[in-house]
Length: 178
Image (cartoon, rainbow, N blue to C red):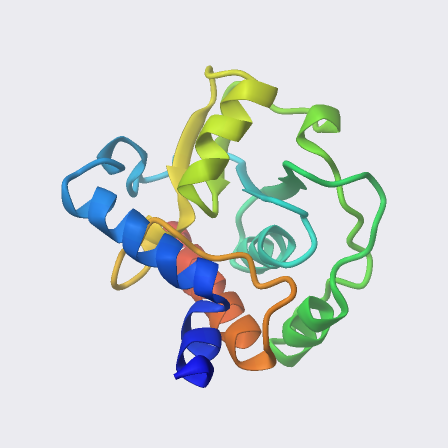
């Protein structure tokens, strides 16, 4: 049972958050932040908690697909490298996170035209409190084949879930850039 929980949801908390956000999505609670087609010249700014796992991978993958992209974190310091597992995962995908350095949202230069792509519904409120509510926000998971609003933070999770999460991030970016 523990292997199923940790391999599929990352943690017990991840399991609870999965079902919590699934229920809210089921009743349309996140429809305002669901898949919006970005304009062809619109910069995609990927936002997660630490800017070391999910958002940097999304940034480099979107760039590899020809999009202008950037990333930052809500709860991080500046100038830290990407997580070693994220760097290894990216390398395996033919991408590189070797030059990535974290940037906190408070230190990031947003543009009015940016499309802000967050990984979790809780990031919406946190982003709006720290940056403001003028930016257009969407949930990354809403671009997946089976849309879901919550992509759990893989930091401090097992290898199986870490890989699953990063694959989901890439699926979301593919859907966003399609």
